[in-house]
Image 1 (cartoon, protein in one colour):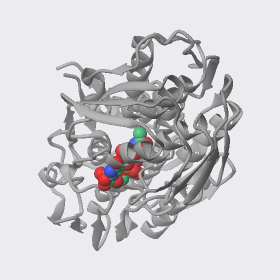
Image 2 (tube, protein in one colour):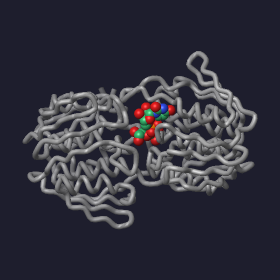
Image 3 (spheres, rainbow, N blue to C red):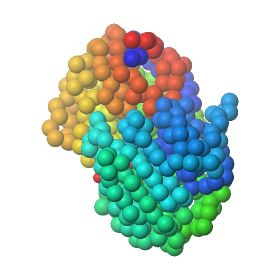
Image 4 (cartoon, rainbow, N blue to C red):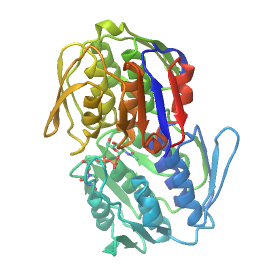
Length: 419
Ligand code: UD1
C-alpha cells in the first residue's frame, strides 16, 4: 500500500488549478444511462471514483473513451445488463446512483446494497422509498436491491432528510417518468444543480434545482449532450486551508468561489485574507495569528461535512478553544485520534469535538481512514515539525486529483512511496 511522506514547515506559495468536482461527475456519468446517445463530459477529474464508475458502466455494456484533455465519452446504447455488483459498490457508495437511471430507462436494475461505511451507517432507504412511491417494485435479496418498473409515474416525494445522492437518484429517475414529480426537502448542493444543468441539456424538464423543491416533468426520451463539470468546491476548500495553515499566499484558478461562501467566511474569521473573482480565489495568512473558529456541519449552503476534518486540523494549530459539531454523519471523527498522536489537543464527546489550539504539531506515522480524514492528516503533515507518514492513501486518490503534484507545485515537500 502506498504512503505519503511529508516534511512539514514549508509555507505554500503559487498558483494551482482546481479539478472538476467528484460529486458532480459521478451522478453525471450515471445520467448517461438515461440516454441511448453519446454523452461527452469535460473537466473530468482523474480520480479513482471516476475510474470505478466508468468500469461499472462498461461492465454493463456501455462504450467509453477518454481523450488527452480528460474528456470522457460514454455511449450507453449497448447496455446489456442492469447489474451493479457488490465488488464495485463496496469500494464506492456512489454506485447507487445507477439505480434511478437504470430503472427509468430500462425498467429494471439489480444493484448491491452499499454496506456500512467508516463515517456512519449511511442507509439508502430514502432512494428506495422515493422510487417505490413512483411505482417501482423493490425487494432486497441476498444483499441486492432488485428493482422493477414498467414505467415510473410522477408523484410528490417528501424527503425526511435532504439526501444529496437521494435527490440526484430520484431527479434522474423522474426525468423519464410519466407526468410530474415534485421532490420536497431536496438537497440544494451545487452538484445537484450541476446534474440538473446537464440533464436539461439532454432534454429533461427540470425546475427548482438549488431550492428545496424540485419539479420534474417527465419526457419520453433524453438525447446526448456535451457538458463540462463544475469545479470541485471541497478540493478548493482543502487548498484554501493548506494555504492558511502554512501562512502561505496561494491563488486557486478554475474554481467557483460562489459555491464556497460559508467556507471563505470561516477562513476570514480564522484570519486569512481572501480575494475572489468569478473563477479564482487568492488567499494569504499570517500563520502566527490564526484564531480558531466554532462550526457546525449542515447541508448546503451551510458548512459542509466534507470540510469538517480539514478545519479540525486548522483549529488544532490556531489560537483559542473551539467547538466543532458534526451534524450530518454519526461517526466522522476518525481523524481526531491520529491528530492527537501528532500533538493536537482534541476531546470528542458524541458529535462534538472541543479543540484547544497548540503551538505546534509533531510529525508521526498516521493512518488515513476515509477520504476527507486523509486530507486533514496531509494538512497536519504540512504544518508539523519533522516527518509525517500518511498510510492507506488509496482513500485520497478517490477524491483529490494529483494531490502531491499540486502541493509540490506550491512548495510543499511531499512524496509518494510504495509500501
Ligand atoms: C453526499 C456526498 C458526500 C457528502 C454528503 C453530505 C456524493 C457522491 N457524496 O453523500 O461527499 O459527505 O453528500 O454532504 O455526492 N441518509 C439516510 N437515508 C438515505 C440517505 C441518506 O438516512 O437514504 C442520511 C445519511 O446517513 C446522512 C444524511 O442522510 O446522515 C446525509 O447523507 P447524504 O446527503 O445522502 O450523503 P450522500 O449523498 O451519501
